[in-house]
Image (tube, rainbow, N blue to C red; front, side, top):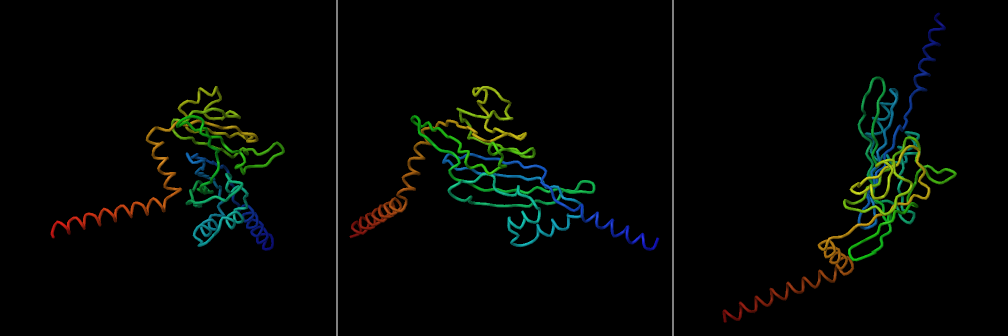
Length: 256
């Protein structure tokens, strides 16, 4: 018994350590489309943490300069990446937040959040006065690669959000939410979701927005400023200086 008991103890410890692992159980990616063709992306990953891995997760979470690649290695997952990428440039305004541990019985979980911005997610066409057609660029997808193209796995959900008042022109494959139906039935909806291992190959998604007159004027002056910002600012300064000089000379002449 003196020999068997230590052996059993060692085996128990080995089994306990072998059960220590992390596992991403769900991924929710939300793409919010902007009026300039870019998009803001929020990705939330639910992470299962075994009881024996809690200390490691807490240690990694408190570490300074623990990069995303180091997190990928520590969690042994390929899902901790940006799933929306511009083929011609990198993402920007990137933030990564490993959330606090939520305890449940003998195990635990946490939520990992990636937020970033991507340009050229949609192409824009001016089809009428104050009317713009936005067409989604499916080359930005970075999901699971299959023989038929990219697709969502069983634990993934993709949400695409459009501006309020947008008119859906084409959407294929039909989203899982709202329930499939004719295009006209999507009036009033601003979020569309695909899940249940949906194929993203050849996804077609386009919509039309109508600018108000005020928005058109604001966009016009914004474009002028973006193109001639320094010149406009210099002109304003010159005008202000001229007005001040004129008033100063006028007051001076009045006193004389």
